[in-house]
Length: 332
Ligand SMILES: Cc1cc2nc3c(=O)[nH]c(=O)nc-3n(C[C@H](O)[C@H](O)[C@H](O)COP(=O)(O)OP(=O)(O)OC[C@H]3O[C@@H](n4cnc5c(N)ncnc54)[C@H](O)[C@@H]3O)c2cc1C
Image (cartoon, rainbow, N blue to C red; front, top):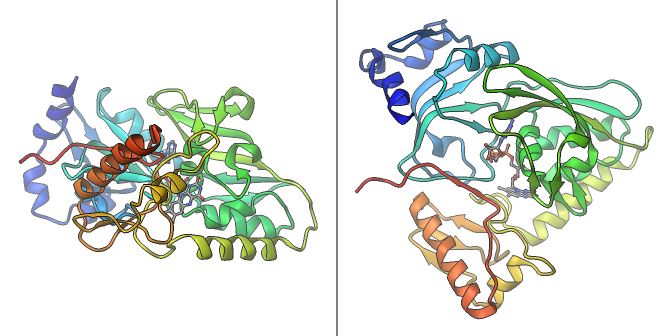
């Protein structure tokens, strides 16, 4: 119930804590006090954390609470301690997210840079923690002489995000190289699951509710392959030619409709360069929206809606966002 969640914050002594450096206190093992219980964490915990710091669009509201666990045990322990109805939202590198200007209720659990174990453990397999950057997975796989993970090089997210989105590029798709995963549930229990337990499709995986990825076993091929780095470079070059890399974006905003490309439809509708506030449809790739500086999440969402309306009018196609839009509208 939302009321209980609210109590979790309001019954605390947070105002006093807020005047201090909360992160530092939390790092020292300070406990987040609630009316009913103390939550002990070893990782970093921050209150009212601006999500623009963690989202590749560089905009968006605040998270009520932001938690970066020290390790898997700390994460499980945190999940075991939080109230049953505390909303939790999982964050990788924020490269496929729009957090509305009113922010996120509850706790954002951030895994980038933690849960970052990565090792090759036989000729064709890799263990990858959910917080490892996809680019690193690609690099380390080719270093080990493995083939099949190169497409991950240009995806600016974490392994956890790639699993959740079934991220893909240039013909490669995350779940094509997954043998098994480990997840954690709301009760902080760890679960091993074979890839065959998941139904996957284009940018889709049927992850059970209240269960999230903490690691994956990848199955690659071609031990002793020496051309992997070249293949990565070729893919990165292709990306740089066709996409506005280096600009604040979330990559492709819309899923490609069956048999067509969202970018083509948007371009034919004459929307390249169209803007709302400082959110602009990229001139280089029409399926990218750029924050040209100071765009609000509201500007971006309004531009998304405007594109959907125009494409529907011109082509009769309903464009579906690939980007996940979350959080609350700003109260006026
Ligand atoms: C310049 C650019 C280029 C891009 N190119 C591509 C591309 O070629 N192909 C492609 O598929 N995508 C692309 N993307 C989009 C994005 O990088 C991918 O969707 C990526 O997989 C998101 O990973 P992330 O860690 O940033 O996830 P986030 O954006 O942090 O989260 C995305 C979703 O995954 C969930 N999630 C994150 N971690 C976990 C976890 N551990 N367990 C469960 N759920 C989790 C979040 O709750 C959220 O719903 C691009 C983005 C940018 C900015």
